[in-house]
Image (cartoon, rainbow, N blue to C red; front, top):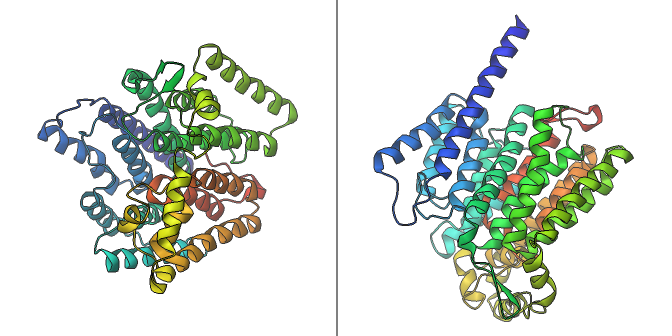
Length: 432
C-alpha cells in the first residue's frame, strides 16, 4: 500500500511537472514587440500558472523562478505575466500561498543572517526614499520561496528550474539571434542585445553550473538516462548562448567554474577524462564555426579592457562621493534608490560597493557575515565543495555586477543552503 501511494504521488508530480513545462513554453512563444496578449489570455495564463500552486506547494519555487526568468529575459516587454519587479502582483500572491498552504518563514541557523540583511535593507530603503529597493525585493522573494523548500524533492525541482530556464532561453536566443546584430565593422566586433547581455549570460549560467554540479557528482544524481541526457545537452546549449552574447563576465564565470568542478569532482579519473573530452569537443565545434570571434576580441582586443568597460571610472566616482557622505550614511548606508546618483548617474557594477552604498558598513558586515557562515556550515555538513562552487560563482560575477539586486543568485545560494539542510552528503543522498 505504501508503494502504491508513493507511485501515485510520483505520477501526480510528473503530470504537474510536464503541465508546467507546456505552460512556460506557451508563455515564451509570445514575442510581439508592440502589444500585450489579449486580456482574456493573460488572465487565463495567470490562473493556469498560479492556481495549481495552492494545491501543490512543492512547485512554488520552481514556478516562480521559471516565470521570472522567462519574463525578465524575454525579447518583448509585453508578456502574459508581469516582470519580477512588479512586487504589487507577486508579493500578494506569495502571501496568499503562505497563508493557504500554512507555510511559515522560519528563522534557522542557515538563513538567519540573510533575514537580518533583508530586514535591515528594507528599513534603510523605507527611511531613505520610502520605496522598496531591488535588494530588499529580491531577498524577500528568495527567503519566501526558500520557506517552501522542505525536502529533497523540492530541492530537485528548484535545481531543475535553473536548468530548464537556461535551456529554453538558450534555444530562444538562437531563434532570435538576428536581433543581436553582432557584426564585424572595420575589424571591430560590435554587439547589441534586447537586455543587458551581462545579466542574461550570468543568469542562464546558473543553469549551466547546476548541471555541472550534478554531472561532476558534487550533488548526487540518479543514474537515469533521461536526466543525464538533459543535463549533458544543457551544457553546449548554454555555453553557445553565452558565447554569442559575448559577455566577458559570463564567459569567464563558466570557464573557471567548469575547470574547478572537474578538478574537485567525485567522478572516477576515467569519467573525468571522458567528461573533459566531451567539453573539448563542444569548444572545438563552436570555435570552428566562428562563435569565439566576438568574445576573443572583447577579451583581448577591445579598447575598454583596461577600464573594464568604464567600470573602474565608475568605482572611482563612487569612492570620491561616498567618502564625503555624513558619518551616519557611512555606517548605515545611502539607500538603494541613491546608488545611481552617487555613482555618477551610472550602474555601479560591483556588488560589494553596492552593498556599501545601500547599507553602509553595517550592511557590509551582515553581507560578508552571511557568506562566512555559509562556508562554515558547509564544512560542518561536509558540503564544502558544493558551497565553494556556489560562493565563487556569486563572487566572480559580483566583481562587475550587483548580484544582490536580482532574485536568481539569492535563490541559487538558498538552493545550496537547502541541500545542506535537508541532505546528508556522507550518506550520498540523491537530490535529483
